[in-house]
Image (cartoon, rainbow, N blue to C red; front, side):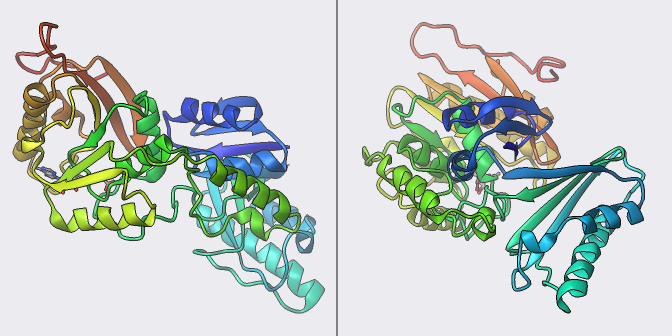
Length: 391
Ligand SMILES: C[S@@+](CC[C@H](N)C(=O)[O-])C[C@H]1O[C@@H](n2cnc3c(N)ncnc32)[C@H](O)[C@@H]1O
């Protein structure tokens, strides 16, 4: 069957690699998503293993739609009782692009009416809608006058791994944090640090990667588990294989610090939820006093973008980040992920790699700074170059 895994812009290649590793075939990059083929086992594995997928959709049908009436009639042609029962809840999510229909909420509403009316006509009552925790999720993607209707095999977004129930104000999306760790090329052996770790997302995703822990091992329920063709035996076989493939802890190799004791407490709780206490060490420090635990390592950090800080202070903060990396992190590869492109120029070091990513709607850069030790030339800029980070 054909399946579509959704992800962040800029992360499609990483997801292609993840899908190939679980046996998907005919993998094809599309916008913020990857199309692939596989059987039910591949679909279950994509949900369990893919760290950078947000949801895995199974396209069911496509039809032409240029009015709400057409949409209603097409949706009603499908026999919905073949797919879910009266006592299950459902939800519809719609995305529209270049369509004559302009309101996604109204489209979802119309589709919901068609399904509810069909059940009511056949059974005298209808299943309830539950936007937050639906048993059965349906996606409508309308591009121009073509509508693709898909069933959502993931249910709740896959970034909700199940370890983070306490969040600070600007937590990084788990799937994006995993993408950063993978994109950095971290070898899982060198120490890894985040000196502004917040709720610890980068640290936790890194530890899970290092210990080969399946991304969604802790997730309580997936959409496909409410489907009529759910194969529980197959799912438990896949799940048990994932648990058996986990690697034991090698002791602390991942280090996090933050200036805020409150967010560190959240990080501690999340790390405990993920069962990674033995892999990650936390300390309360301003990043300026960060001392490296070994001569070589990898820093991956997403500093504040500056929403709650004045422009002068944020530029100064990024300059200090550059100074700290230069003076205190010799021998390390330092990666900074930021949505503040102006502030990034003030790091004052020449990035040896620049990746364009999006954090939701925010255009971001993932920048690599190689901080040489000894005699190797340090890439230092006297002052930020005009346009240095603009492409
Ligand atoms: C964008 S958040 C990081 C979010 C984190 N990646 C997560 O997933 O939760 C930036 C973090 O920088 C921390 N921070 C701000 N100023 C700092 C400083 N001078 N030293 C260390 N941490 C600082 C904040 O407390 C906040 O937790």
